[in-house]
Image (cartoon, rainbow, N blue to C red):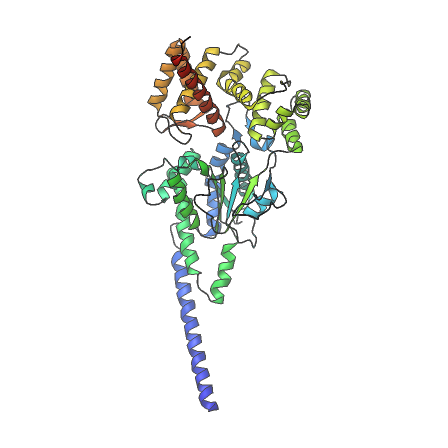
Length: 481
């Protein structure tokens, strides 16, 4: 009996050894098969990416051109670290708010090698809270690390995507799912100096990583040990800005694309509140909400902005601390930027006590249309140009949603119509069109692909202003007296 048991044990052991050898042979054969793919090994890939992607993304992101200033404003010079917290009652977080965390702590979670199981970070904030700027800044930080790394050193590769370009990349392919071509076009439009071939590489690489991950999907100790090495070293981080700017059907398709990413890819998704409710929770995700600026953040921003005119900056800070309506605006980063622009161009930090957001936005828009250029050129602002801009943009906002495209021919027709209504000369109309098309100020886009509003805060202002004029016109038609 003992001899039979021994023989059985030996046979079972031999079967186990043979099975293990076969499993190892299959794994090794599959591993060899993915080595000669059209894309490089991990270290070679990152070295190549550092050469091809760092400079184009830095050029597109590091200088803030929302208002096309006569002086370049580098994000790294005026950037103020945000404070974030887990939204109360969010399905992604706890029932009650957790203590606030500093931005750098969240950034370290995202980009550093760790044992976290999270793969997706969702950044929520209201319009103007600084979501886009924060993603720009994080991308620039990782690009700087890549720039300073050695050729044989592994570093995470950041890819910044403005999702507003995804909904118009190709309508046919989005009928089924988001494909490599759609994402390639989105990246190319976000970073114009990137060619389609280079923009395609990150998304082709995902296919290779998926295949590699499937090889290590077994349950053996060998496979699980290999899997641990890959899961927690992010090769790619996709900074996806403007999820709320996508059409609802495109949001669902992007949601499924993100769910299917290999674990060596991480995603940071920026959006306004409540846009994810219709879709549901993403697996392996964590959500943070951007808090309003506190007094220390406001002070740091103003000091950095007015570093060349400290006296004006300190006067502005005194106004913020003593004017409650001004403070309520200053806690929102975009509005604090608009306030700083207004103070700089007027060289005066005084504001009325009941200063409203609409008053500020009107001032900022007038600055963008012509007042800044007028101050730079030491001339009087062109009121006809300003009046035309307010009329044209309000009319376009009534006829278009924020995420829709305005065709060039429609823009020209609107400018001519409003110009005729206001009695403005043709040379002023031509100058306005030139600035609108080339400046990238309040509208962004191209003549071929169409234009859209550059920021939802300004779109909301123009829409409200247009509706006010429309209601006033209707009231006048009913009662001309």
